[in-house]
Length: 302
Ligand SMILES: Cc1cc2nc3c(=O)[nH]c(=O)nc-3n(C[C@H](O)[C@H](O)[C@H](O)COP(=O)(O)OP(=O)(O)OC[C@H]3O[C@@H](n4cnc5c(N)ncnc54)[C@H](O)[C@@H]3O)c2cc1C
Image (cartoon, rainbow, N blue to C red; front, side, top):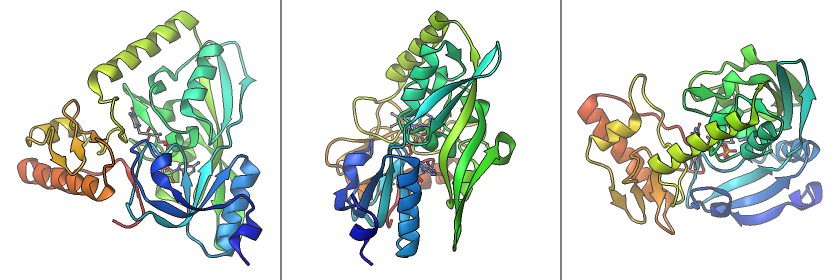
């Protein structure tokens, strides 16, 4: 049966560059916006039925999409409900769907005088994407606030909804069980935040945002840090020390401001980003004997 019949609203040949913060990437053969949890589950079941590869797209802020695009179904998550659940005098729980923007959750926290997520201000992308990659900054990460994560476990014959407690999420630096097992699709999660003072929460956020403005190339499209920091080292420092700051290939370059950022100068190509990634890996290996590992994810053939 045709996909258009099974999944009303599915689009064809949608350019993914319009859905990534890098503004890079070719077309998805099929593209579907899942506005609700039910839409998301339906889209995955249709892909399974048609034996079509599928990919869950959040904010596209940690993603390098091939210039040739992706020959499967891209499911863009837009299930965005969020609410505050009361607990006790000292803390509250926010429950949100995976497609909610992380910034939306930070705003909800501020509005309700909740502290613990200030570090996340300025990190683009979705709540689900942040949990999967255990996003973090300023020494904090999602693992510090997550209480439970509800996933769709996609099996070869049937899929089921499961609730993971924090300890089962196996969080570590930019890692989680959800990253290791791509058949676990995050539907929603609960985070626990402490009650705090609005003025203090807002001033911390301001301080963190100012630091980002001063140290990151925010005036060009990028995907944030390209590589994970090796234990006890800074990937940016290692790349900079190989003389690669400002190195340009085609219309992309290693940022002059922060060497772990690659920026798109306009119409940049994924193939050129990949060349810069390979060059940085090679030079850092030769000079320091360290293997840099990508923090970013790839979609399509490289
Ligand atoms: C300017 C800038 C600054 C940044 N600063 C930081 C920072 O300080 N710290 C940090 O950690 N990151 C940072 N990032 C990277 C990025 O914002 C985070 O990694 C973010 O959490 C990715 O979320 P996303 O929704 O955009 O994921 P996407 O890029 O859409 O997807 C990333 C991966 O997650 C998967 N995925 C997405 N949603 C789900 C889901 N619901 N279930 C299962 N899998 C899913 C996708 O399939 C893909 O493999 C920065 C990026 C930019 C552009």
